[in-house]
Image (tube, rainbow, N blue to C red; front, side, top):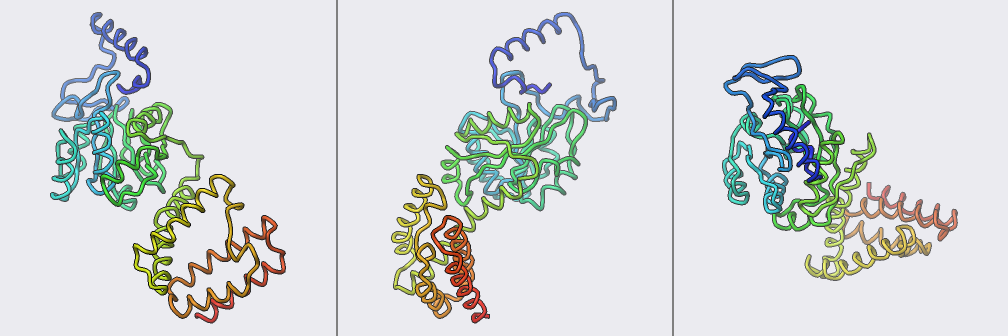
Length: 351
C-alpha cells in the first residue's frame, strides 16, 4: 500500500495512522530491511541509504518530481504547485529550462539527470516527447513504493515497464490542453479533460491530481488511446492548419490574419454552438448540403488559382461534408456522386 493510497478519504487516513502508531508501539517491523539496502520483493539491492526517495505520510500528496522542463512539464508543475500539490524536483539537461521551471515552481530542486530525481521522489512524471519516453524509462530504475507516469496522449502506460521493480506502479496522465503558452495552458486546465491510466489505486491518485488543477479525469477504453489522441490532434493542430488555410483565402479577399480571425472566427463559434445544441450532422450547412455543384466548382477553381496549397484540405473536408449530407438525407445519392466526382476531377487537374 502506497502512502498516498488514503488521500481521498480522511477517515481512512486517520484509521491507517492509528494502526501504524499501534504497530510502532508494539515494536513490530513489518518490512525489515538492513540499513543501506532496498527491498524489491524478495531481493535487496545495495545502496548508500535505506530509501532513496522521501516518503509521504497518509493524507499527504506524494513527493512528486517532473522529468522534462519544456512546455508541458513547466505548465503542469506550476499548475500543481499553485493548487497546493508541491513539486519537489525537476530534471532537465537544459540549464535555461531548469532555471525557468524553478522560478515558476517554488521549492523544486533541479537535477540534470533523471535518475537523480528518481532518488528523491515517490511520484515520477515524465513530461518529455513521445519518442523519448521508452528510452528514458529504460535508463532509470524505480524502487518499491514509487510510481511513474507519462503525459503522452498516444502511448500507453506499458511503455514505462522497463523502469519497474517489485512494488512499483505505472500509468499516464494526459491533459487535453494546448501548451503553446504556460499561463494560458494553466488557465485552460480548469474544466479540461485528463485521460489517465493506472491500477485502481494509482488512478484514484491521478484523479485527485486532475481535480486539484480544476480538470476532470477519464479512463479510456483499452486500446483506444491512439484514436483518442488522433482526434485531439485534429482538434488542436488540425484546426490550426484549417485556420491557416482560411487566413490564406482571406488574404485573397484583402483580409490580414487578424481580420480573417475576426470575421470567420464568429462563424466558427456559431457552428460549434450549433453542433453542441443540435448535433454534428444537423449543424452542417453550406453548398454541400444544398447540392450546389456550381458553387463547389467555383470554390475549387479559386483555390487552384489563388491558394493551391489549401486545395487538398478543402477537398478532403468537402468529401466528408458530402458524405454527412447524404447520410442525413439532405443530398440524393446521384447528387452526392456528382459532387464527389467534381472534387476528384479538381484534384486530378491540380496534379
